[in-house]
Length: 409
Image (cartoon, rainbow, N blue to C red; front, side):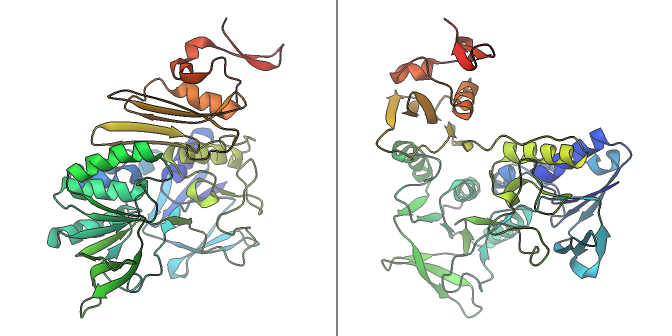
């Protein structure tokens, strides 16, 4: 049987590894636009100079050889012939498949600002090819503007700061990291970035540009008229699942590929995992989706059940943070519980006696209990700040007889 995998990110590599462990004699072909396997989580360390290209590779150098995987690097999928069971590649080549996994990830969006889509000095920060371009730009220019202050934008800012470039960050929200943090948490990180020279323009939006004779951007103009001089621009204003090659092929996809609980698409024997299916855009989820899809491709029915709250971790300048769930989703039924001291900040959202979200800054060890409680919506045995004292030592588990989750007395 031939398994074809599109993408060498977390989902694609996890799937390839799993298939080989289950089917020693099957053929595996992995096709990737990237010419090197790399961790997107480590791109900022590559830009900073802390790690080399080889050091952000998350598989062994002989991974493909040892696992008997045929790897086609630097190739892109351009279409899919479902009736003929063929993948169409750039250059006109086609590859037959028995089982297909689409793990093509996502691409960065360029906002419709004059000059952004035409200029040669506007970069994303999505994969290694983007990081290489930023590295080259940073060798010749020292002024950068970053549009967007989510995790990708702040990773880019951190990498540039480490190599001596203090960027200006433009964010439409009133705080940085708006999807991951609340206002107090964001303020703690903003202070650390500003102490190292980063400048922030919050509740602001880029509206225009100044360009030189070659069409390169020399300044980003904000809506209020403020001009931010720059040698290059990094766009971190959002991504979209890479489904542009799936038109008119039968696979249901709008913003993302639609999948069932087994990660199978609307077309039999075609699966989707990772960013491309829109379920969750973080590394651990992508790895698990790749493994789950692979098991189903190998005939082992395995539902994917991690469709609950998003989990994000970060650590900028020595301050670790963990956020599970939507910490900013508060309604009239939400109880907000906070606790803080000189080194930690904790926040929990509780509804009807069940934990909905939690944010921890400063100390994030032994926090698996919160993910479990949110995923399973377990009734809490305590209230108020005692929530932050819970651990698995207090938890008995699921009682089959009583049909409920119970706590130790």
